[in-house]
View 1: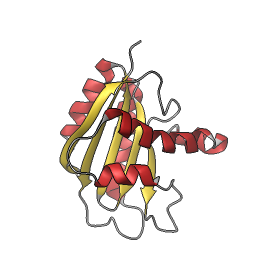
View 2: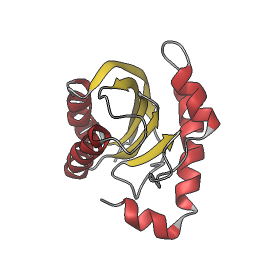
View 3: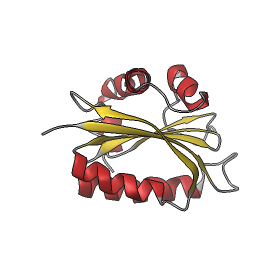
View 4: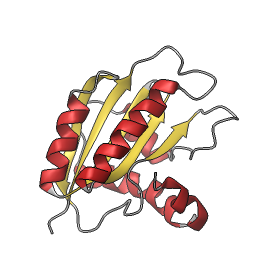
Length: 155
C-alpha cells in the first residue's frame, strides 16, 4: 500500500461563519467524512474564519475521488492545491476528517488550530510538502494524545 497526501487551501462560503458553529461547515464535514470512509481516506479540515486548509491522506485511487469532490464542492471557493506527496504513515489514522477551528465560539468544542498550520494557511501560493506535513503533524500529535476524543472523531 502506497500512501500519499494532498493539501488544499480554500474559502468556505456561507454567511453564518461567525458566532455559533456554521451549518455549512457541518454539512461539508458530513459529506467529506462519508466520502473519505468509502475511499479509505483520512485527514483534517482546519478552519480559520472563512479560510480552510484540507489535508487528505490515503491510497491514490481513494485520493483521486476525494480530490475530484473537493475541487467541485460548491461550498468551497478559490480551491488551491498547496502540495501533494508521498507519506510514510498516516498522520490521522483514526480520523475520517477531524476539525480544528481557530477563533471558535465557546459553544464549539472542536480543537484549536496550531500556529504552524495558521502560518501555512495564511502563506502565499503553493507550499513545500515537508513543511506542510510538519505543520499538520502538530495537530495530529494533539489528537493522538486524546484517547477519548479520538473515538469521538470516528464519525
